[in-house]
Image 1: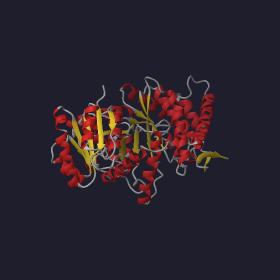
Image 2: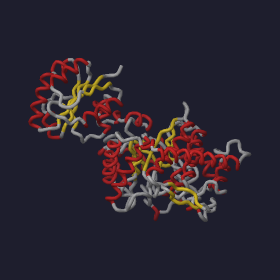
Image 3: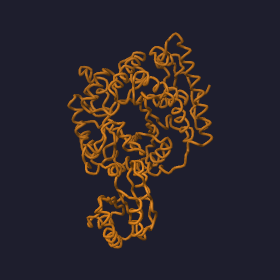
Length: 524
């Protein structure tokens, strides 16, 4: 049986935005909510609390602190009978009012508007006694998603050129409660040569991320996160020794989920030692390992085609192949990455249509053993260099992506075009994103636009045709969509192609694309 919360703006206060937000979160946390409105008298609140058999009463006051202190004192006296019966009371207002109200000692919890969503959710779900402790924050990706819904959990890439800098940065980010998930960005030698010190190049140490060189390094990074809101850690699958790395990630950082490519991070893009077909087999094997260990998997795949100027159809097909292979190899919780702005230049309408087409294509793959979680993000190459323009792009792009109601929002910091994010950058970026997400909670349904829906249908039809071509090219295979040889053949034959693969020995590289009416299409 759900509990009931009654809430109102008290006295002469007519500001109810905070009250409505509180009740929206309460509803998502399983409460029955009763909104009494603005400028409600003390007597009316007490009467409603009795009538509704309220378990919790929330009142707000955002006017003069002196007046608020007097009014809330009267309220506390009038509500004393309910208080003695065990009814709980919470207050929300401006910091000066909160400061005075707290001295009354009547309210179980006060909110001044500066709290993160997580703090409010934690309170509403009964975790206030655990605040500041690991037990208050779910320590698996799926549980954290469910706990924070309808807001997406937030992740950001982080890794600085030294262990010391990275440890201090993680501590600062965790204390600020800026993220739910810290994505460890490790340097290339860590991804490729962690178990091969003889192949490591000291001159490359720290290039592109934190130079982890031992299991204790990973444990130190994890320990740094054990504070604040206890964010989860995750990282990439690596580009060699995949299973050994997977086992190590599980025992050192309690990896929230792993990012695994399908066609990439090998000789084709210069980021790993495997050839194309061999790397596909290895990636499928590590998907299977994570599935067997009930650890979610993200395939960081379609956007690699988009960043190389592949057509929207190839992007959608890559996304489908990713989900299809994840399910085929036993992944139970699949994180579908939906990177907008890839390539840069796409219109918002056509970008949204492309992501909706992906969702429409992969949704039928869901079953009781295969759950899809949506993760959106800004295009890695789309941030302008000017920091002020980049902040604007970050906020606007975030607002657009909320139309998909993502479970995870992958923040790409506004500094990315200039430098790798510091802890302060991550914290600032988180604040920008949180505000954009809050604003988007009441946004109109942009997915219903007729032009968007027409493009969705077109992409679904053309993507189905391309998938049929891939199947037909390898009709001797039991399942061409999971056969490494057939998948590699789709690339070498040019069925899956991108302009930036020109002169690549694993790809045809002959396709030409262009942005036409906001969409990325093949041109002759």
